[in-house]
Length: 364
Image (cartoon, rainbow, N blue to C red; front, side):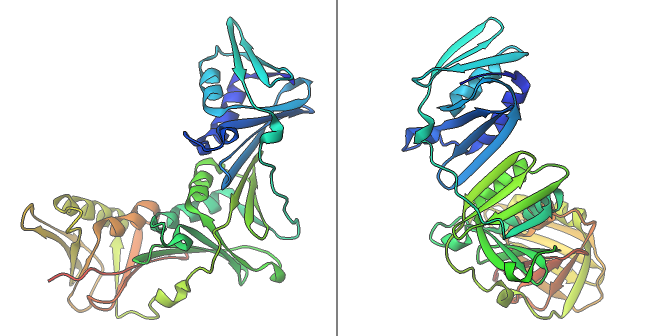
């Protein structure tokens, strides 16, 4: 294999694929990036056996072929090369010679045959979503996914293609975030997918600012195809809990609050909490909300903010971190807090199809 490529293009491609490469992989090949040169493109692929990322970039190909090179070391070399053209030549023993200006490197690789093959996908089930819309949907829910490995089905986000809309849900059992978007797909293409959080975070990082994302599905894997980038992920097997059951069917009180004002107030009063007693008490009164934290070993904090509310006086406590999470990821100026009593879940809604269910904390 022999090719010439612009340093900036090569570096950009490597940055898109190298983040999923583990530092200490049990299989040496999983620490490598697969390079395959043919036509006028060179493709770069990495995998950790759960997530696979592939991208292609234009290059001048003298001899087609493929090899695998240590991803992080190859990236480090390319980053330090002088600007301009990079010439890469690989011999029959998978030793790569890298030249750029006065710089010369030899890097020992492994045969491309050792690299895990990419799965095949049925083209009948393809879903198209705007990239920006999909990224925003993921950002609005992914923080609510569980990190408890004993509840593996919750270690990701549910993508539900049903009833002419895409519903994305994440929950850890104490809170739940859900967002919906109408999209077109055939009635026989209805499906539920549970995508691991690692894949979700990779997509948030790499999705573009425009263009269409194509989603393809197999029995055990899902592929996200956009902007010369292909992200393939294993699906989390199992049945996702019936999330509709935890969404309150009705509420007694509804409060309109400025999102940014609420976020800053919660952040300030939570300065006097610790991990053991992390709760902030919300006291709702006529057109005002008082936020209180009280810790006998640390101290006390109070703040009052204006709200649109004429209902009964109501007090309820929540985990401040859980309360701030959706406020950070929403872009609506105003949120709506729906409540019934101090023991029932609170629900945050906006003027878009989003909701966040949060279990209260019992305090004396």
